[in-house]
Each structure stands twice: as C-alpha cells, then as structure tokens.
Length: 594
Image (cartoon, rainbow, N blue to C red; front, side, top):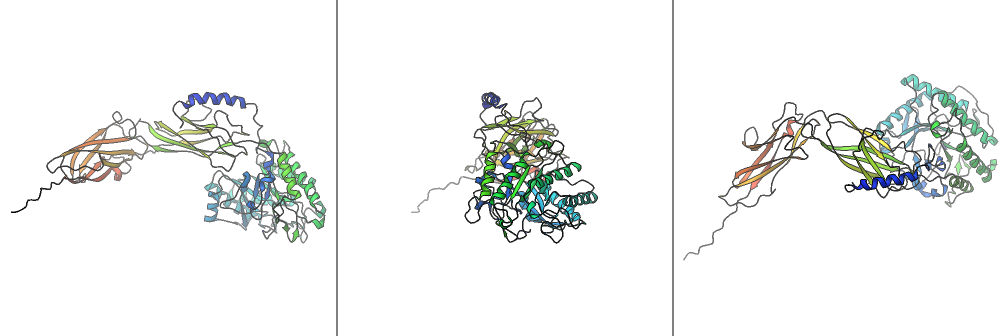
C-alpha cells in the first residue's frame, strides 16, 4: 500500500570429436538435476519495493530476487541479478504511461512481468471502479502483448484477500466478460496481504469503489502482524482463483509488510518476527487442491516486502530494510538477508531469448537450394554461470530422429542473468518449396545443470515467397577500372552481373541475360548469356559476358533480363553502368625551328 506521496562455426569435424565428449560429460550430470520448480531458488521468491533508487543501496546483501518501483523505467537498473517488474498506474479506464512512452518502456523491458495498476480496489490508491478497471486492463494487456508476446501480464495487487476485496474482483471479472465476451486473459494473479480495517471513516483500507458496503473485516491495529490472518487471505484468494478456473496460474504478492510505527508497538523485534514468519509461511504453503501444480502446489509464488528504503508512511516513522541515511542494513534487513542466504540454491537456466530467425538468399532456379543464415540468441537467467554448451538447429522438432541442420558451440559458456546473450549462427542450404519448421535448441547434450528445460527450444517457420522476382545487381567490368588503350587498338571487356531472386519461386528452364550498349529497347544488342540449373547450380549466380572489339571511349552498358509474365517487379530486371576505356595519348617531341 504505497503511500500517496507515492499515493497512495566451429572448424569442420569439430563436433565429430566434441559431440561424443559432451555426451559423456553430460551423462555425469544426470541424476543431479533439481526437481521441477516455478523458480530456480527459493530466495528469489522474496523481493522488495523501492521508493528511491535501488542503486543507492547494496542490495546484494539481501539475497533476494526481484523488486517493484510502482513505475515504468525505460532503462531499469537491475543490480546483483534482481528482476524488475514494471507497473502501470490506472486512473478510471486509462493508464499511465501510455502511447509512445509505454511502447518505449515495453521495448526496453522485454520478457518482464507487467503489473496493471496498484490497489485499484483501494480509495487511497488507484481507486478504480470495477467496470473501468476491466477496460484499462484489457487495453493495457493488448497494448503490451502486441509489442512483446513474451511479456507476462499481472492484475493490480488487490489490497487484501478479504471477501470485500474479492467482491470487487468478481465485479471486474464479470464486467470484462460482459464487455469483451471472454474471461480476463491474466498471466499472473496478484494480491497484497496487509491486515487493515475495512470500514468507512476509519483507519485502514476502507471500502472498495463500486462495492455496496459500509464495512468488511473489522481488524484492529494489534491484528496488523497476525500471520494467521495473512494465511487466511492467501488461501481465500487461491480458492477464488480455483473457482474461476485459474488454479494453474501463478499468484504473487507485490506488496506487504508492517505499516504501523514503533509508537504503536511495532519495534524491530516484532517486525522481524513478522518477516520471518511470513517468509516461512509463503515458502511452505502448499495445497494440492488449490496450489499451482507447476510449483509443487505452492499457493504463493513470489512476495514483495514493503519496503527497501522508505522510513515514512502517512507521516509515521516505519521500519525499512536499509537505513536511508547510513545505507546500512537494519535488523529487519538483516533478517531478510539471513533468510535469503539460507534458502539459496545455485542454478543455471538457459533459454532461447531471441529467435530463431533467418536471412535468406533464395535460389534463382527451381529445385535448387537456397542459402540461409540461421540465428538464435541464448540467455542464462539463472544465478550461476554456465560451462560450455552447444546450440542445435534442425528441422521439425528435437524429438524427431533426423540429422540436424548444424550446431554451434559457446565454449566460454554464459555468465549469470542480466549478462549479454550468446548469439549463435549456422549456415544452411536447402531446397525450400513449402513452409518448413526450424528449431533452435540450447544445450542438446545436457551439459548445463538447469532447474527446468522447457524454454530451451523455440521454433520458427521458413516460408518461401510465392512469387518470382529476379533482380540484377553489381554490373561491372574486370578489372573495374580499365587500363589505357592505344588509339588504334580494340580490346575485349569482360562484363559480370549478379542475379538474385527476391521471391522464393525459382526459374524453370533457361534464363537469358542480355547485354546492351544503350537502353535495351533502343540500343545495340551486344550478346546474351544463357543460364540454367545445370550451368549455374550454386549461389551466387553470376552472368559473365565477354564484350569484344571495344575501342577506347565511354559507353553506357546495360544488363537486362527479359521479364517473365509473372515476374513480380520488372523494374529491377535491368541495370546499367558507365564503362570508360581510356585512350593512351601520344606526345611527339618538340621540333626547334632554325
């Protein structure tokens, strides 16, 4: 409940040797793989809220995993491997940032989890009617997903897991279905677990906007740190998720903590007990009937302590993880750090983070191979650097028994997360007459110990353009600058021109390339070259023509392909250059008159 002042290629044959070695080494890793888990290390489930600048504090001491700032940072600092979760703020049915600013934020935060609003159910925070929040969420969701399909979208953190707040959430859910004809497409569910009174004109969280009630949970100040009430909220929210077909989704808690000051009895010792109690609770809560199956049926996947650095809440002095003046850990921060240290597991996690993609040089002749360069970027999102590994490219899927297209190795491995990805590339030649599926698979020999491998493979489709579109380029002489020629001498000038196919459908039969002095429609035809799949079977395709009996002079020379009726663009079927055959001048000796 952030206050309103925030208000509130390796050499040929390499793999013949290295591959078997990798396989033997990989066998030594089997049996030591950690069990499947939503998050690689439990310490990374714990995060914190930052009200100033995270770089002002040595957050590596805390041994946590993520943070929020209640904003969208275009270039967020993510020290010590912490993961930033951007947040939009909602006003009515709109949100900020939006438009160009939000588009830039998305481009700079690819693959992040986006939180849409902050306590929209709370009149002291975003304060949004349910029907308006449904619109804002819909528009923000599709704006972000259209620009980054890898993004995860979370609802705003509902202030508390109480019946009154879930009534507000029901109104949002039903409003979305009524307006858009489908359930809300939520990737990540989100709640807060404050223990606050729900009553008009009283301390606490009051009544959610759009809910017809005057009171809800009438908790007292001394209930504020009751772990059992926190547990009730998580279970109640998870039950709501199951009732709405959302049990398989993650649930995160993007803000909770102690908002009461020391003069209300909440000293360091009491707050520290609450932190340790809730951290242990969140990390251990499991229920096969309610929890997330992918995460060993845990009820809560991540939680975020309020706060790293704020020592003020609504005019009262409260406790943070760091002393804002000395930049030293407080006793609460020390408790956070100790818990994280005791719950850390070292792991690596490779993923294809970009691609695979390809660039193509399409075959000029039908049934001849096109030439491709395949690319994929591999990142390590774990907290431990990897050793060497390979990336395999192939047709179909890795489960199919087929020779791979090729492999590339990253012998140095990758550092821990937030380091630049490894960019892998292989060359490939293939006859492509229909759409093909190509995969990129990181670590096919299981060299890297990962906590899960479901993101090691990604696919793309290679689809040839359905048109024929021949293009001429780089018409030149050999040599490109012609030497001096005596005035009475003629020479043979070799001409060359490159032929490419911008379309994916190649030429059937012969291809004539004509050479002209002057424009093809009005000039002098110098001769032609006939090419076909037998005499020009490989790429690049080049037409070479010997232009005989050329006297010194300057000539405008064209190369031209008479276009087929179905050539998509005839304008690029010709090209010209100025050819200069310079004359060698003769200078007679001077004769002196007598």
